[in-house]
Length: 248
Image 1 (cartoon, helix red, strand yellow):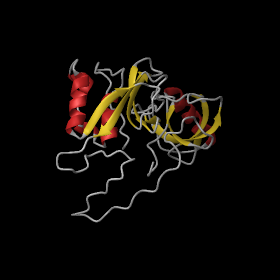
Image 2 (spheres, rainbow, N blue to C red; image 1 turned 30 degrees about the horizontal axis):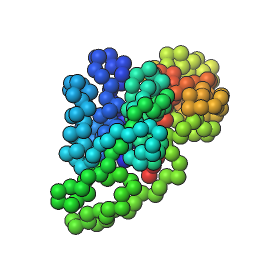
Image 3 (tube, rainbow, N blue to C red; image 1 turned 90 degrees about the vertical axis):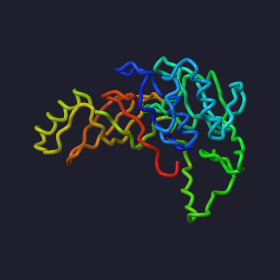
């Protein structure tokens, strides 16, 4: 699986349906987002379209009870945003949430297993799941070294002290940074609401994936900015996990 982030959220200002399903399929089949149709936006037969698309690329899809182990596939259920959402599933747990918040599902209500179907010519289909032992085709190219395996799930299930995250500045932050710089006689690059800055979690208040955090935000200059009791999310004034480290 190669994680892909959805590009359209459920509250899209143009009224387009969110494309978490498109991003989940792209992740599972290891395809670019633009190579996968936005099934939900194409009509009420979106499920049949998705099944046909995956079948044409070497995968059989089958629903299964949520209390059974799913080795590779997709899970659906309600998100904390109050909408039905799709995530990637591997090894009996969520392996990737296409939403930028990476917060996953409140509850799994449906599971769809993705099973490799042998191609007519006997070759391995694109998007081979990680558990496959099929050798790579090296006829015309030298074999590529396998990336070093990352020993932890990504994103982490809960905020962790010292973890590096991305923080999105809001208007109050911009005003506070300006006052801080004037008082300290510090000069740095201009900041605007919506700017995304690297940050380090310096305190976690509570338990769970939605625990508020204090962050030390790195600015484009010699200074930093401290924010307190920040929730994870995608709007200004929230933090989110960055793209996964290489090898995850």
